[in-house]
Amino acid sequence: MERTLCSGVDGSPESLAAARWAAEEAVLRDARLHLIHAGGQGPKGPAGAIARRRARQILDEAEEQVRSVCPSVRLTDEHAEGPATAALLRAGDDAVMMVLGSRGLSAVTGLFVGSVAQGVVARATRPAVLVRVAERQPDGAVVLGIDVTEPCDEVIEFAFSSALVRRAPLHVVHAWSDPSPASIGPGEIALAEQPKQVQEWEGFVDAVLQPWRLKHPDVAVTETVEKGRSAPMLLDAAAGAGLLVVGRRVRERPRIGPQTGPVTHHVIHHATCPVAVVPHL
Figure 1 (cartoon, rainbow, N blue to C red):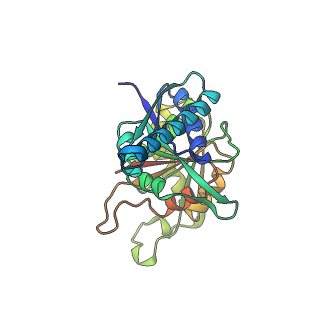
Figure 2: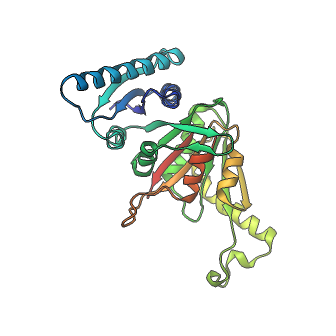
Figure 3: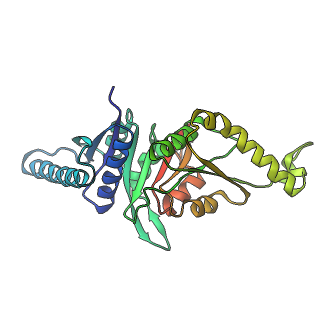
């Protein structure tokens, strides 16, 4: 089956930026790009005809923009009726990734992720990438945020493969903190001196990454392992990066529904580079 990237378009500058990014990504990954305009309940009569004509205009504009940056990309499109979030999730189920636009409010407040994009990121079964309208750094490093206490193969594999297709370095970031005194038992790393703790955490990160270094020997990997808060460290590392990769644990919370987690939620609202959110168990 042909590999496919999906990109949701709604005519906004953000969605057009996402479509252009997705086209370049499709070429890098030797995949087809499927543009999808979702929304509307398919009304009958003149209103329905107007909605379909507007959808066609949006798709045509997106295709023109895509062709302007990637003339060789294999391209298909679709107008999917019904609720936008549900339509995009269906389209992305079998895709390599779903790519959507994010609205930038200001340099101070960072990104505002709309309800549709937020819903897709929180529920997608495949990686979802959010792209904003900003000066792009296509040659920048891929930044990966990991928690070595809960390593996730899907997130690490996506980051390594993204660095490989870009021929870009991979910068792995892990933030650690002291546990609460009540949770410390005999032999815990938190009982060691600070320099020893740093060495222990660096050893954990190296052990988690070693199989992936062997699998992808052409990817140059650097590491930042520091005590501190994950989100600010990731945002600092991602300044000027080509892509930031973070994970989202797949779990349903009663009465709450799917969640992105606090670190992922923070970075998708404030990162200035594209952010890939990779679901994992």
